[in-house]
Amino acid sequence: QVQLVESGGGLVQPGGSLRLSCAASGSFFGINAMAWYRQAPGKPRELVARISSGGSTNYADSVKGRFTISRDNAKNTMYLQMNDLKREDTAVYYCNRLIQLGSSWVPFNSWGQGTQVTVSS
Image 1 (cartoon, rainbow, N blue to C red):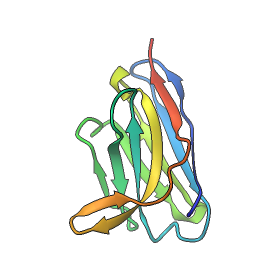
Image 2: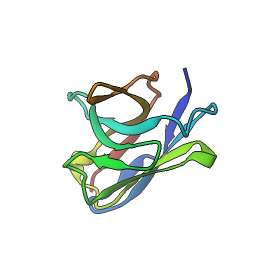
Image 3: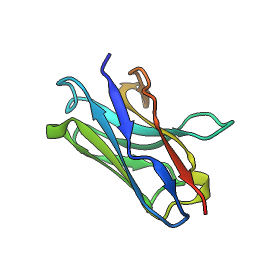
């Protein structure tokens, strides 16, 4: 397993911005697709955004136009720029590596601690 460490969360007012980081150990980083997930209290974990090894991106409808996923393979780091944050974005955010099974992308690394994002006035 590779260690994934999320950071950058915090308390922000509605309409504000945050930038999350996911730092990964090991030399695999450029090979795998990666993703950000989030889990709000009482809700299942959901996919927020995905980025391929080549940089292609996909987003959940709820964050399209507001969030941007990116990666720096030289730094073994993935980012999530979150703009125009809404109260419903409040959750713990996690990153993971992805493997393709048929037509689905599935997280396969152990989960890190995540980073809390709270959007509140």
